[in-house]
Image 1 (cartoon, one colour):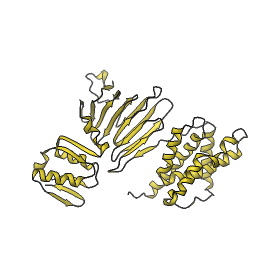
Image 2 (cartoon, rainbow, N blue to C red):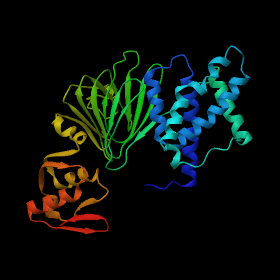
Image 3 (cartoon, helix red, strand yellow):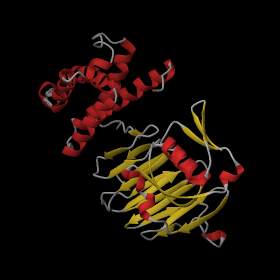
Image 4 (cartoon, rainbow, N blue to C red):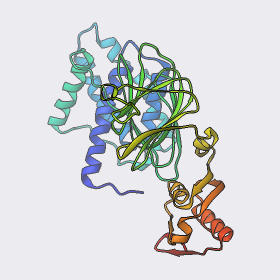
Length: 347
């Protein structure tokens, strides 16, 4: 596990505080839905800081409710009977709070309390709407499936990070790294847009995979329809340089800053094999195969032989089993595997 430094820890608390204030105003709004409540419960369980900050800001919310007009007070004063209170009580009953510091002192720093009051008051009265950006991430070897507030289902592959920013007119997400399968809920009034490395993928009620590697971006359409807008799409004239590329089911668009974009038709079974915990290789150069296996395991494979680099590999392998893959290849081609400093050298 990565150890957080003081700066990262402070930033985590600040992010949790901003998200908590946004959740409070959303949950007390008129457009509260079961999907929103489910999203809140997932957020609450993601980090100990989330429940801690939510509880602290709720105390401020109660104070604001107590001082508000009689017209607003009934709605602001329902905290003790609300689903959020029951959720926090359930977390405590099941020991979810055991990993976080002791109870928050009831006396906040005066400046912090005033700032929190200002944020909540402005949000409550509609002067300023605080829209936070939920982030979803996986570690190396981890996969995760998340259902967003709009019903869209996202599947994150190993070592991926995604930031969402839904608005009134569009649903926008940003893929920071890794690979995600999107199963988009249809909403013709709010297009679903994925931003990745300067490109944008727009979809309506469709299923597609976006993958970002160090040197390229790949968009594979499984079903439906997507439009990929990019300065590097395959357009013949300068005037059409920014026209979007419309993909058909089964097509993959590969985008790179160092080469023209390329359209091909990969085996969809291979593209989505990671969802089954598998890596499907089909006439793949051994260095590329090793790089693919390394995505799922902290024990990296290093191809340490010019002859081995020229080998072609096919087969079905399990994600997270770099050692099994390396020894299998060694037996097949008469190579040897040497383990040193946490790496597997194929020679």
